[in-house]
Amino acid sequence: MSRKGHIPFRRCVACGATRPRDTLIRLARLDGAGVVVDEQKRLGGRGAYLCPTRTCVDRVTKRGIPARAPRAGAGWTLSAETAGLLRDLARGDGDGQAHL
Image (cartoon, rainbow, N blue to C red; front, top):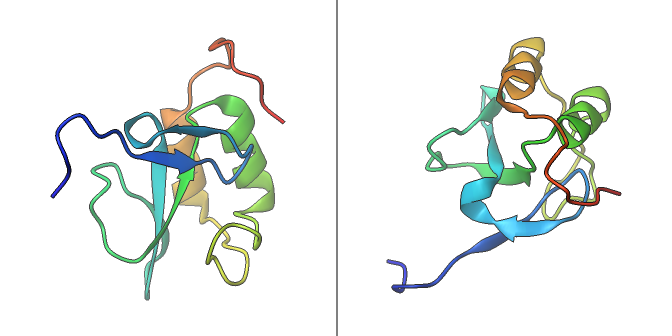
């Protein structure tokens, strides 16, 4: 149960920016299914968050999710299908936010 008015923040695994959870793309690592895009942000399994920008999506689709991501264990690799879905969800970088 969340408190009224509370906005949960999460950190992007690609650029390290902290943003409201609802503005980020959630990836979930599921046993037997690999890494999937969790559009409803409700799947079980270990989760990682990603800014919906081309810069962050390109960084993760080329390099995978880094092992330095909190509790990620070994780095996560994305299937071609998951990488394609991420590219479809990404928008241009015209949001005015600095990305590392």
